[in-house]
Image (cartoon, rainbow, N blue to C red; front, side, top):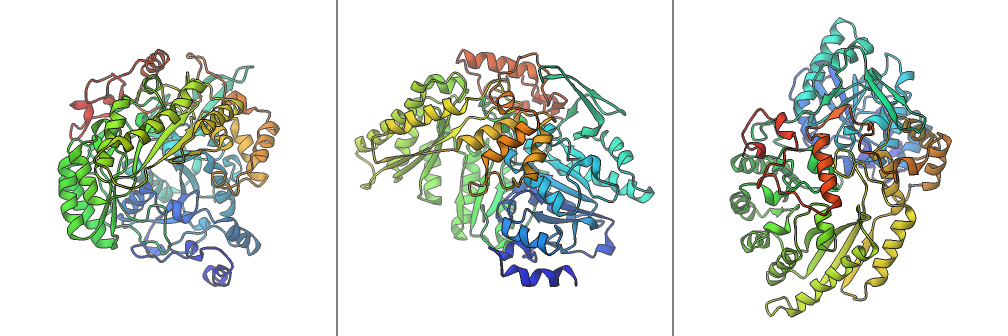
Length: 616
């Protein structure tokens, strides 16, 4: 019985069977006999989340454009289907061909979130292979990983053969070319990995020996077999000429971002000290409006989507955002396509920008003050004052908006309970300002507050900071909730348990591999999902590995300590991050990259001037 025949009777027994069948519009099907390289692009979460990931769409398009290569998709099956797969001996398979992973050369994982790591192990196991790389033989696919979490690869070092650090468009194809050459002459994994380590941006954990001190900190990291001392991230130099999909796979079921997504730029000029993405994606590189308009039109016409989203870390910082919106709106209005513009900054929000947004949609406005008072915003280098927040809300209210969502972070470095109470006070001032306006909608205003628990991340100025303990976070949560008296203000708070576990793995070392393996063996998967997350299992898994959460999450590191990710170079120098940490403790700000270069080091990555802020 082939795999298709085994699947069909099982699909009616699970939620959302369309997750597991493939065959969607624009999916790529090739003859396996006509290609000499096959890769499964694996996303360690459900179909509707993985299908929304732009990086997967880009790599899928680039790899499949090569006639010798075939990229398929694989997502983590939900627990109901996983149970049936194990009961019926169905291995993890590629959606396009329904082929088991044993027929693929490579399984490539996208690491977007630390709490997806157990799903990585589970998918390798479902494929029929040992998650631990030292126990996998030559018959197993090469297991690789990339994405933002790969900048600290060490917690997964026991499981992944090769990490791609940085942007993968060019690096992936260079690795594939090398793999195909080794395959033709007789593939041996160890030989391939030694040579792959010479490709800029590739980190092979087996080629680095890590020694520890008695206190658990790292004593040394030693490369061997010719591996580089520092692995420098890869970037796409010119975004306007970079290959971008002309179409997307159109899913059968509704996905998280069920729309055409247009990437307008990469990187950010702002330097918010808590934001890992703002540092690891430097320098900022923008696409030309002509290119964006052509790509957006192609995506909408080929997919039939009636909604398009402009994607970046800070869309309103695009150097030609007004021109871009003018041109995009002419097209989307004519075609009755909804255009969404996330990632707006309050310090460059204007009447003309609002007019463009109002032509797009009249829904709630979302802004991110991040902290409740000026001192804390200076600590994190937000470079936004209270008046700019009020001005943004006023422009929006006078333009017809009645709902404002405010994003904040709590448990930031130097934060006190009084600082947290200022979050509620700021929200109350916005409510009062709404009712003070003569020109406003005659509807009830709603201000919703969403508060995330701060998680220190590597390659940020806060990478040395100890995270708040459970007790400290809960005290601040209770204080804020108790301070809200108005029914016009609502508060939502991120779960403290998942935030602390995220903090453990965000700055963890390779010793955490034992804890990760323990947790997976004890049934932990889908740890980012409330209904499946089990904190008690994680406590036991970490303790059984002889480790503590406090060592990784709440311990403040010395500035001269060897950090687990020190063999990785994302362009931003450690000296720059130290300067920023010192300024944060004094609540001193740094101007954005467009106003004044802060000598972060990212300019060394650039050889092309087009669209790059480092050369302005």
